[in-house]
Image 1: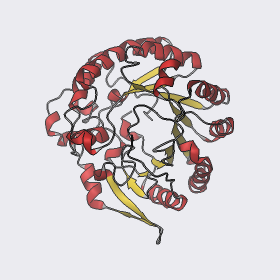
Image 2: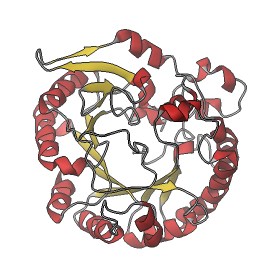
Image 3: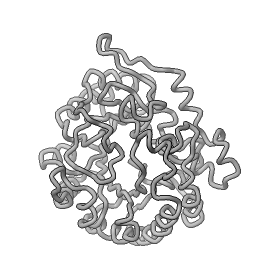
Length: 362
């Protein structure tokens, strides 16, 4: 189903992290450890539940959400008080957490998305601990614990030059772990002013085309193994849409520094400020929303993307990622051109409008 249907309130739990991923899109943007304010989270839930029929909450972070485990539990319990059994819970995590946390997630999360880059030696080189240690073994343990208790687990792989040609191996490895839901995303530049003005926009269209061709090969293998393998570039191939994702609606992300943004990439008031549309007032306990900013965000829809008009896959792409487009062009209606040929290639080799996808990208 179109990606925008994944409507939720997202909690950016903390800027703290236990890993030192080589391609982190925050890079050096966060210099002070901050954690989400519980009162802010509660007010965000009240506002969201009042305005939206969705009762889906999502834990994410500028670092690793489970480092604020007690706060996660408190937010979940508060949301449950308001939503009851209609509540659904999701977390996107790096998977490096304790057995205690794994057991809690198994009984309290509807789906656990874990970032994992595939073959252990590649994953460990890209996603080591802060001290340089391996992480794949503890992630394998936690996946096993979660699956053994009936928890739904999905894996999200970032594709870099190190695993670009190993997507088939990634699928085969994940199959051995027992996981049946996998998405991959091509690596992209860090959020920064540099990205807006640089002529070097990531790894380029040739890399993206290679990613697309290798993805199709891996998709065939995945289908044979009973695995759903999705691509961030193709999240709307099962249904026509005017907007790429919930960021364009917008759906709220609550940040550790007390702001409401529409995108995971807008992790603070200074990161992609065009996507900041609310601010928490600690004294009054009220979130002040900027209606002009909301209106500006809502302008990003397929019919408004001048450079995309006439494209045969416009309404199954909708200009692709708002955050990446804005980060690399400086415009709400900016489009990451490196993606275009790869998306059109995927549209020729993957089914279009042939049934709603069983999973929505994390």
